[in-house]
Image 1 (tube, rainbow, N blue to C red):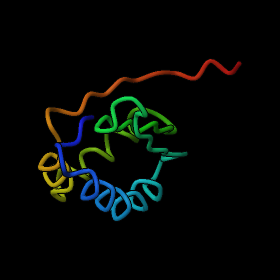
Image 2: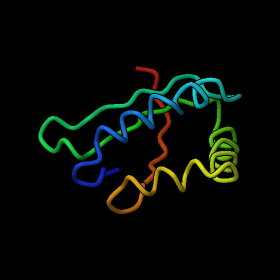
Image 3: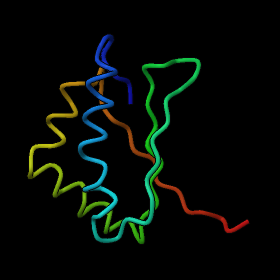
Image 4: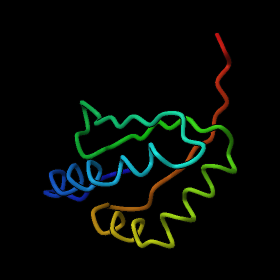
Length: 89
């Protein structure tokens, strides 16, 4: 995702406020957030879930509670999702 110019501090505070809910949601194994060194407005969430259904349930909950709409106000463009399976090596 890309944070709007001048809104990084707001996004950082938003993440700090909401990340405990992500980590505590049923099915979440881990979540890490990284900021791109070369493009500091680019933010990456790397999340590990028990299964995709757990993540989709989490997204539905966040949407219902209005948290996704709050996030959208801080972003320039849409959030893109990519789903991967760890290879175990």
